[in-house]
Image 1 (spheres, helix red, strand yellow):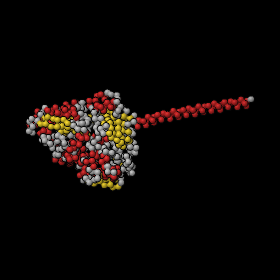
Image 2: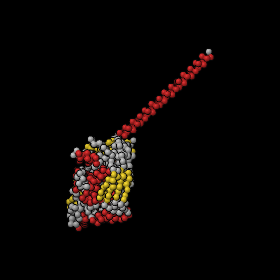
Image 3: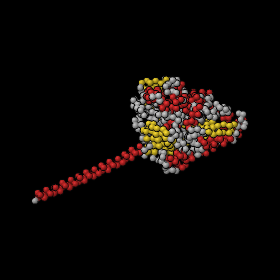
Image 4: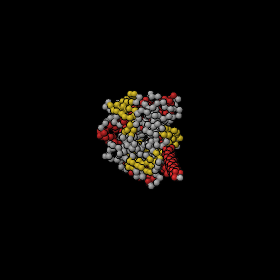
Amino acid sequence: MEVSAMRRVRQRQRQRQRQRVGMGLSMSLSLILFMSLLIGLVGGCTKKTRERPLVYCSEGSPSTFNPQLATDGPSFNASSRVIYNRLVDFKPGSTEIVPSLAERWEVGEEGRHYTFFLRPGVKFHSKGDFVPSRDFKAEDVLFTFNRQRLSDHPFHKVNNAGYEYFNSMNMGQLIEDIVAVDEYTVRFELAQPEAPFLANLAMDFASILSAEYAQHLADRDQKEQLDWQPVGTGPFVFQSYAKDNLIRYQAHPDYFEGAAKSSRLVFSITPDASVRYQKLRAGECHLVAEPSPADLASMKSDGRVKLISQPGLNVGYVAMNVEKPPFDRVEVRRAIHHALNRASYMDAIYMGHAQVAKNPIPPTLWSYNDKIKDYEYNPDRARELLKEAGFENGFEAEMWTLPVSRPYNPDGRKMGELIQADLAQVGIRLRLVTYDWPTYLAKAKNGDHQMLQLGWTGDNGDPDNFLNVLLGCSGVAAGSNVARWCHQEFEDLIVRARSLSDQKEREKLYRQAQEIFKREAPWVTIAHSTVFRAMAPELQGYQLSPFGSESFHRLELK
């Protein structure tokens, strides 16, 4: 009896132990299932967030998808900043030069030789029936720059290419040779030392193209597609372009800096700033270019919008074509300067988010000459100067107004009407005309205008980028100097400044050049504006560039 009782007690203990183990297993399995479900949900949300298209509301259509052929922000943002890379780049949010396709570089021969050591393992995009058979190498660097500098290069004249940036900076005369030392080493040999050379190579026009893709197109007699069906090494692969409507990109899975945080990128081309704002509020866009100053107050109080700003490295101006009478007379150019009430434009157009410009470079740039005396608003003095020039009764002229909003001029039509009214007070009868953005730029490059509105946002933090590109003699032929003003005394100063390594000595020369510019007045300098960007609150990773360009690689929707 005692044995049987003991046996039954042990059986009940074993049974309870099995039940506890079973309950523990059940609880563990439940916990595992719950955690798996939770991880799946989080992973699914992360995956869905990454696959959700990042939509950028752009202010204008690109004139090309090859930054070698462009000078405008909409084209650079749609090409060089998403599709391509350069040998060197600027650290995000600064003017500091950092490695990119080149891991490092050396300067020799007293500043005349620049040797770049290329990053191995960089993959080009695939495009249609083109699948690259090799990684980025020295021959791609040679192809990129030789296309621009050698007139007998097989791609030099494709699409009537003008290489405006390259030529306006005298790069063809500066670069004597480019040598592939080996597959991953390239040496640039210069005719003379060039202080801004390294910074210039971080600019958009220096984006590296694929020599293999170019040959692929040449074999199919499709060379012109190089500039419209692009292949680069950048964070996004070009997919399609519906003209004046949408541009679509897919993340480059093998990007050497890591795949983009958003797998799809869409440019929604929306020229009207107010419409861009409404799209942002409706969730149709996540990042908006050039918000209208009239909308800024509303944006600041709108919970659906995040607004950031910084002083712009820019200048807005009205250029007078000095090759066309009566703008070949300095008295006329000075008269127009005196006739314009520019201070009133700051409130009417910029809503107080700009300052009147007196120099062709912004006050945030080194060598800015603050001692220069600006032209005052003085219609009586304007009439006197017109009389001295033989135009006592005034004259008729035509001015082009910007068709897109830019940071340096957010409302070209309105500015045109204000200028028209001011000039009418001194007897100048102004006709206002405009064109779509690519046509506007092409005709301006050819010098078809009498007067036109334009502006500039710096590319590399060097005064040469303003004074040489926009006002140098080489810029006349290249098309970047839309005043078509070639002044030898000014030219000698900026050429000398480029060859010096001592920044203080360069500053002296650039300040003298600004004095000549003000005296000769090829532009009416209008404004230096504050730069704003508006975005959805869930957009993370955005950083304003001092150059006004956009980078989408690190952006993600949370």
